[in-house]
Length: 289
Length: 238
Image (cartoon, rainbow over all chains, first blue to last red; front, top):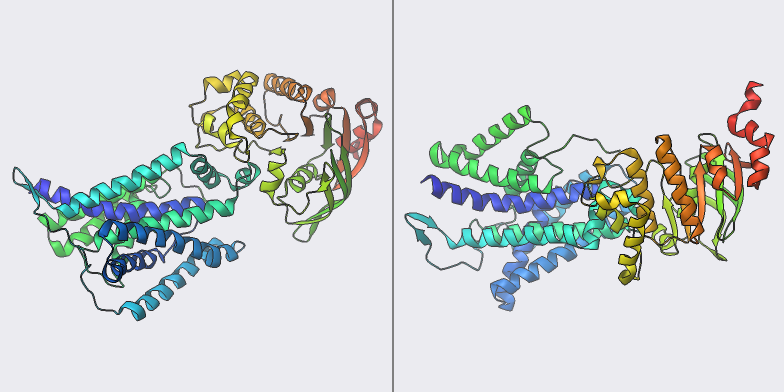
């Protein structure tokens, strides 16, 4: 029973982790918190569904297609909504992302309607039973894909010049410019990667919840919470915090009450932050100016 | 090599440079002296293309660079080692050095440069895997210079490399600057430590509140009353 709850908690936590990674990535490089992220991710899940239904693409191809769409959407938003505001205070940019939320949510509702529907792909394999612990294929896919995302991100940041440049730009923009790094290019890439990651999360969760225009909102809030729990400026922290949140939520749902699972998880979040305000792996809280 | 004509720079409505003319000959060490706030660093920032509001012209080897993007200026081999070192604290020493070569197209030659940089700064080689934020001030300055050298500078601009360093580090850094110059790199040096700077300079400019007030060969500057007056502000005392 405990193992069972742990596994489903980790699966949910993986989705939160993808979202948290996308949020923290963007925050680290450009100090922007993207409240439109849930809606940008949701659109990607609809794009994947459309690719499957209308074009008859197999699931993996539709997945990749939607990620590509996400990268382009990220580039577009950065170029036409964020970059023109480069002289505005960060808070204005953050409010702009709220506008993004409204615009995308409304437009998506107009295109795809407001009713929930099933995602047109479901793994119809029997769950694996390991001595009484049942692991669904959904969980396995979620784990593997999330792991793949994290691994790619790690390799990008650790072993490629552009990845190191992205980290450099996150730490000191002026010095990065003096190295010949184009900060605009770094921002574009970050938006592209971040959006693709959120869409990955949305497609993975879509077969479990319904495909619906508000589907990613609660997940974004959980992703934020996971990121804060782990320390908002640390990518590994975001992953650990999100997994932890998923597990706590699942255990609370299983042993206390499934109605109270979020209540319990978020109360714990507040408690942790009272004890360690910078989160589990967060460094000093430095206000950037 | 680099020529600045009638340069004005504004930060918002405040004018910080006024009619600055400057000329740097290839192969030389040129030093900018002057009190805090006299505009020395702003000249470097203007050359690097990171000031917003600038009038006048800056040309490098005959072509105008004053409206170029900072990335393009770096690609020309104009490398700026900023004041206060500005290393990337969370990257390793090696990554910091590597990122200095970001703008270079000749990626295959980077290892040669890396070896050369490590012979200048053996201490950095020993610490290449360490996170840069844990280095001492002197080591961070060395790292900042090493990172700059990876860009294969034709003109290396150093902003206050001795600031806040222990005398033995200052000595070491100046010896290295001398060596870099003797191997063919032109150097533009901003320094508070006039004595030390003039010991390696060929030519110098003295600045006061946004203007060049005096210029001359090293010996002229060294013996000059003008330097003492403007730089040390002695006219206000005596």
